[in-house]
Length: 114
Image 1: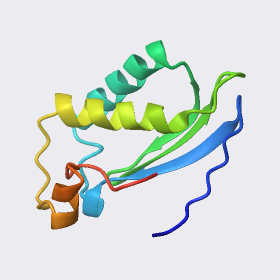
Image 2: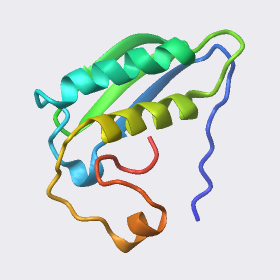
Image 3: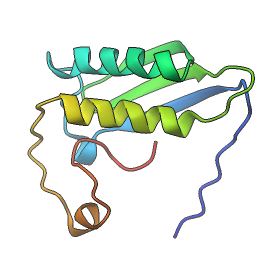
Image 4: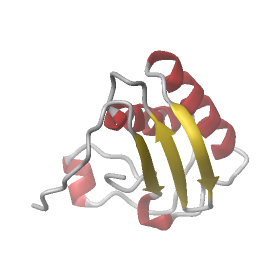
């Protein structure tokens, strides 16, 4: 398995790219945009962070976040955002779940990792 190295700097500013599963172009739909906004706002209430920049494209999203001075847990924030969008949305991508996705109980909206 690949050994990913992630910088964990409390109060750091981070750049992320989050891609949809198999690059399905659903992020700019009338359903996805409000869901993403709501997910960000909901997660920010419990786990504060500043969105310094965001670019939303049909199949991926770029973000620059700054975390609070005593916090470096961006992974939880992304997990909660992706979970919120997946559970609240009724988005039906055309891709099917692979055996690996089924084994890990993953959905088919988001690509693994970020």
